[in-house]
Length: 129
Figure 1 (cartoon, rainbow, N blue to C red):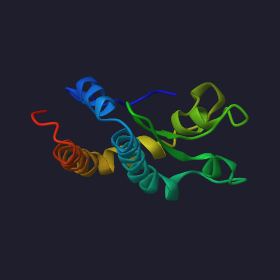
Figure 2 (cartoon, one colour):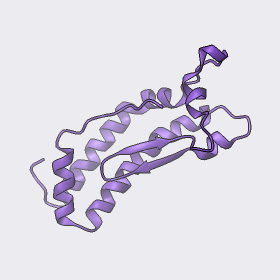
Figure 3 (cartoon, rainbow, N blue to C red):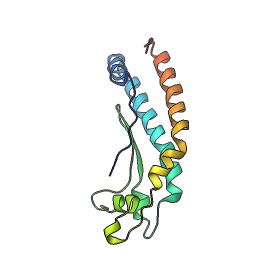
Figure 4 (tube, rainbow, N blue to C red):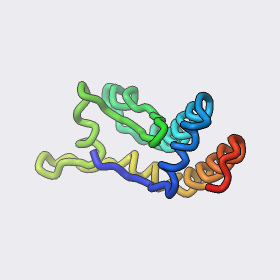
């Protein structure tokens, strides 16, 4: 499935500085990334097509030190990409529920992310970033 990415300038340096601080700082960054992914997922959930409900149940927000991701589908549900992007050869129309959700909340998520990263930097005395 295609990925949409936002590059955080100084992200690598921030992660390095948080590693040096240790412990809770890394946990806070992971939790922040998961919250950002959850904002997108919350917008997408009502629009995920349902037959059995398995696709919707497979959706989850994931945060790591370096990324925020929404995962939908898994090895046992390989059709997530086909549902989302369609397949013209099989006459399956795209239903871009995740891309649409991201477009709807991208400015909100980026704004919230900036505020929370700035607060994290201040909390751990990592100025200037």
